[in-house]
Length: 189
Image (cartoon, rainbow, N blue to C red):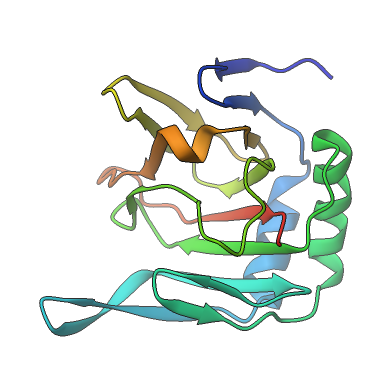
């Protein structure tokens, strides 16, 4: 399978594959209905705020990030279907998947790296998108920036040292009114 876009191979790699999953609307509907979505809270200057983004964690191990512990829910059949295709594409074996539900373009996630100690360093993280197309930004520690639009049914693979040298985000896009579900498959320690 030919990659549509190799975004970078500097200090890690980012490869984008469009249209891997079809019919993608079926996957979106199944995930929205079957997953146990949770609304997270974050503390900012001593006050707790609910995030617009909802999350779910499935797999064989618990996962700690942003000071929160995510208890693993057992794999759902729809997740195992997607996981099988992603593992074939990446040649990795994933123990968990973090799902994010973005109801619209006002829902975003700021600059961060997926470098938690629960993750195997330098292993490929596969990001699968269903629903609205959203912009994905990368920023190297030296200031270089890259962007790609993550389309419905696409897969983006981040691998190697990327999380040590780059941060990424899904920014606010006010004109987007449709929802998006993102799955990031992870290799756990």
